[in-house]
Amino acid sequence: MPRTSNLSGILVMLFAVGVFSLMDAGLKLLTPHYPATQVAALRGASSLPFVMAWVAATVGFRSLLRVRWSLHLLRAAIGVGMMVAFVYALRHLPLSTAYTIFFVAPLMITALSVPILAERVGARRWLAIVVGLVGVLLVLRPSGEGAWSLAGLAVLVAAAGYAVSAITVRVLARSDSTQAMVFWLMLLMTLGAGALAWPYWVPLRLEHAWIIAGVGVAGTLGQIAITEAFSRGEASVIAPFEYTALGWGLGLDIVLWGVLPDRITWLGAAIIVASGLYLIRRERIAHEGNIASPRSTCESGLP
Image (cartoon, rainbow, N blue to C red; front, side, top):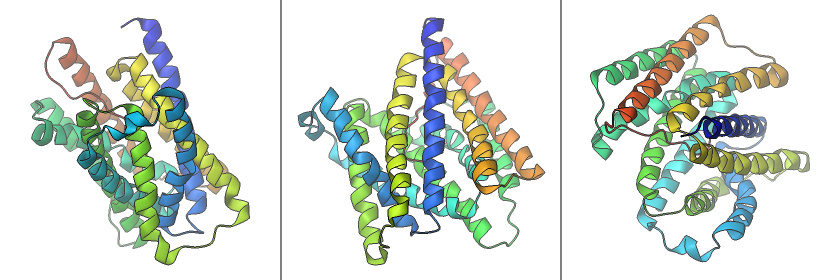
């Protein structure tokens, strides 16, 4: 693929990571005021009008009906659980810490590709997965602090949900359009999370309207941008730039909440990121050698 295409894809990916980080910051600002299920519902509902406009301007709504319903329903159920868990974690963790733990998702995707997609993963990649999990344990380091430990585990649940959803996207992409996958995820997540939140629904406050609108705009722009990034460049070149989210998390933590991760969290982050980058490198080598290997799959939702 031409170098200019990869450069274009990298720039679009950097934009996608930035707006997704702003979306997550908005979700974190909402968590002290509303239940996690309600924030998850607001995330879907706030993006839905923009997604509908995107669908109308590209493929039209008729095409959305010819889809694999069973997989969309499964993906939506996973998406609701993933978003609720991640929002719960954001209430108790700095963005940078949540991102650090969530970076285990690419390792999980590689591991899950073996039993689900029957893809081959060599010994070196398995070793990278194990090393990455050691980094996660360093960040979590259960210390009996109650909510913090539960919040760390919630991020792991969200990462696992993301990994399963990404595998589902690989299957859906063979028959369904990107617009269909985004639209049905947003709609079904809004309905599912909304149903869970309804008994505990807290009336929306007017001063939060701009945050909710911002979450919707950022989530939509991020989804479109990340899809465009992977369509422009090679996945193995584009994917490493997802890790720039850690820089965004650190900056937003300092500016909005005045917090920084400790040394052990930095060490765990370095191990997790290094493991992920090694997996991407091995994937590129395998691809160049015409060996079947998992392709990086990214989607929003969330995180």
